[in-house]
Image (cartoon, rainbow, N blue to C red; front, side, top):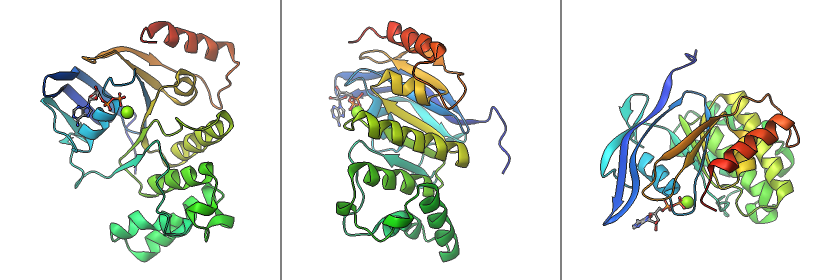
Length: 250
Ligand SMILES: Nc1ncnc2c1ncn2[C@@H]1O[C@H](COP(=O)(O)OP(=O)(O)O)[C@@H](O)[C@H]1O
Ligand SMILES: [Mg+2]
């Protein structure tokens, strides 16, 4: 499949969301390109998770809409995958069966399921753990399985909602690199929500900085640093400082 460099994957158009009288999202518009890696940073309660829930139609917009490949977002039509903050591997399934699960639900042919599962097991180095159960794994291995499961779905769009919030720094660095590697190899479009500015600068091609409620996009920052990125690269530090400067909510 060839991808036009500037093909739009997601279009958010005048998106406004109220919960009762609570004005959460205020007339937000932006695009995400196919294959792009976008990080969204914003204060607690500004509506980041709400935005994802609007994309998956758990909630409906008050005004405006979200489009995927030019069509109003529809979880039945569009293949969205989620990684949440808490690891959520199915405890009663082995690693391999966790990876196969979503593909079996989609009733893909067995050879396709075999092939994708093997690819992800190999890419994540899970060969030794394939017959283990989630409770036998460390938190980082469990989160790797969730990430692998999400990429195995070959999603139109991978949505990650503060997936490393609770992890210590070493695990976080390791899993950040895993996601970057999978993204580079598979070309998935990724929306990654985080609280952590350094994480956003490390991962994103573009960072959207949100305001407090009623929430708008305060600033957009392009991160055009080569990879692998280094936290002590002066250019990295300069961008991190510039983003921090633009954030007045903590
Ligand atoms: N189902 C809901 N009903 C009422 N208020 C909600 C609901 N979901 C979220 N909110 C409110 O909307 C705001 C945004 O929430 P959320 O999207 O979870 O923020 P974030 O993920 O940025 O921390 C918060 O003030 C939250 O209390
Ligand atoms: Mg949230």
